[in-house]
Image (cartoon, rainbow, N blue to C red; front, side, top):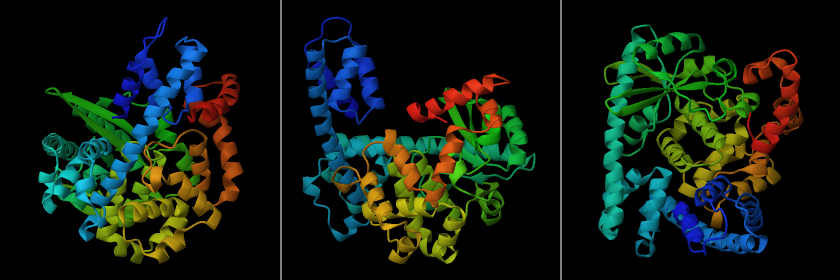
Length: 458
């Protein structure tokens, strides 16, 4: 929807003189969703070679239309939160006021279209939707059911191959959550298969994947070397093409693969494996995370992506997990686990958001035990709140992203030390990251801080 608005705003203008690349402007707006008209006008003047006056006029028109579009999207997201949270049961949703076409578009964007279809169907409200919106949700649910069924069959093939070499992995993300929280393959879209093995099993697991026809996938946008990913990362994408289908598998050996999280959060992998639970997928044996580690993993994953696309669905996952296992997690020492992992504030931020947006029944005493100081709570609330106090409509970027990372630290006094390590890592890290040798290491000592500051890239 936002993309249509960007193109519509551009196409309404008289064609400017000289070269004008509509695709490039749309791509710029996707990458800079918070750019004001001044910044956009400078881009149009510099890259599109428009006269300054014409660039300013065009930029103002585009930004006005985008602001209107974002307000509509924010309203639709609020409706979605009401429909998928606890409030519909209390009759708080005035269905006759819902802009169903927009709500449907946002549900599909967030990956909760199938769940919205099921929710409305169960409540007997589907007939209130326009036929086109109802059909889009129905098709999304049917596609999700077909895709997930195929992924489950493919996962069993991998599990059988791994079982033959003595590997019993932990299922992560959708592979574990869909059967556990939704119990219906049509309700939660899965993009790939996520499985975690022990670090010493990675080579054997990759060899078995290779025998099945999987190959390493070049999805890493920063082209990090495999040796770097093995030592400092936490996962690697693999893909297999067969019969016109492409199966994606994300092989994990750590719970998180973010450089910032690696330096700020302390997760004991041995404890993760010891607490994991035996499970079965069809006839295959595997494991899944204990509920408390499941929650911590989901929270860190959501914050890693800074509330970007897909985060809304993850928030719903967390809401459902809490409603199913909340008391068990509290009894198992969730608060002390978060403190040991140095993820207390991160967990607070996510549970606070769930309670605010979806009505997740998180006990006040749990939030209080996790909460940081009052001033940090206020800034977090402002930073994490989208238009009209709802869910953030866009990924948190730029300096706001760095501020969020600092606010989520359990020990703020460590921020200078962590910042120095991120900007000026040791020689071994630079050698693995950039393939640098000898004197080249010093060149990357200078360029790496600029890369972090200007592009936010590690």
